[in-house]
Image (cartoon, rainbow, N blue to C red; front, side):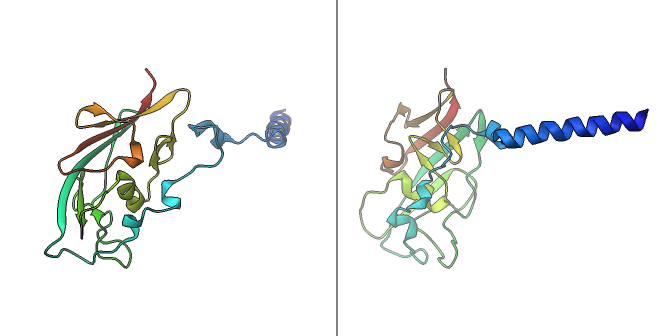
Length: 174
């Protein structure tokens, strides 16, 4: 009797799996934060500063820092040491990190606008008003950016300044 029950249980499980496959069910869809099947990444088209190679520290460069803190669903994201420093065949990109302390170093040869997008492109992480990394804004989640204590809606277009404190928070809507 036990063999017969196992046989029918196997037939039932196979039938359920077949129905799910035929209906197009994908269990990974349950993990998505967006209904959009294509996950756009700002890294698909990198900002020119994310592609520039400085080669290392040198005299005469403008050098300043911004602190970037990221939180996703209540958990802080570690910004790793070594983003853009070194980076493949390049020993140092204009936006880079030296430690896991949320400090982004900005070193440029001449005064110019430096959008935060260039840092995220150097890190190969998506960031704009639609979300951070693979986390997307939707009916249940929002992305809030606060710069120096004030909410800011410029997102990837925000121009980093010396001493900036940027807080990016992907969270459930209130």
